[in-house]
Length: 423
Image (cartoon, rainbow, N blue to C red; front, side, top):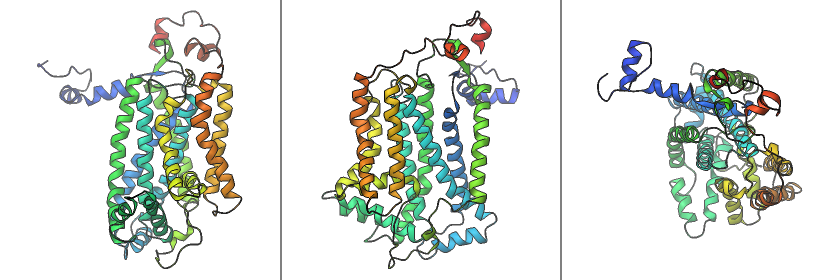
């Protein structure tokens, strides 16, 4: 073996020659083959892989859609209609892309919920969690700009309302809005720059996802018990155990995705977006896409414009400091019965905000949204810090292998033998 070359174990001579000079195959085998993974994952751990698959689908369909889209105010709406009617399988590309955005947020919301329930944000995974929040923010920016591109009524007025929020910032607000618009209203420069950024940001997301996965492989995965592996008896190789389990989840995901695309392709969209944008006609009820509704409800729950904007952005920014707000040494909510109740109340508040965000800003929805918004922040800023000091968690199991093998009983004879270590 020449000096400086990687010593490859690949059997195929061509692949071994490549791997010796660029050890991609060895890296994949190490990171996704023999990588030791807690043996007690449940199906909530599928959603990280599903999010990656969803991102690749969005990038692939987006590239082909961009080949036929015209980012000009006088032609954007018609170019989308041409994609739907004249481009070979253009209807499929567009429906997969549009519903893929909804599927992406569903998958990521479940992924975030899993992190909240099992304490995946706690040490030593703080940076892993923060990178995940960055991905979430980039997703929201990308989805918002993508919603503007069809240049329908809700696209135009949604862009007008959301970009106008920055005018609430003292001193610099109006200048930021003018800069975002590229003029003095939402017009052709706005559409052009939104199209450019919508094309660029998914590749930025992909880069941050790479960092997210790299951080995961440094700290190792959390697990439903929230305790660290004590030895080889607590882990299994990622392949074939979790590649097989992820494949089951992937089949279920594609089944739901296919039902949505082929039977209910417009269920999650807004009918006003099939009307060409008209700056002279304001829709009766301007709403963003459904996955923004909880944060839109928080915005509208505050009577002051600047306060509403601050709380809306704060509702996401608070996730960055969550690892330090939760003062409990126990990760998993399985062993925190009191905290679990408050977390489920928070989940209910989130769905209440989602519901109120889609309703007109009138009573009783405004008051309900205010109560839900108050609890949203109360949970993170008051309840979690206090519970960490006051709650008595249930006793933790001694190891992952013990509850896996015998429901928490003693390890069977030979559990630490070589066959178990290989598993």
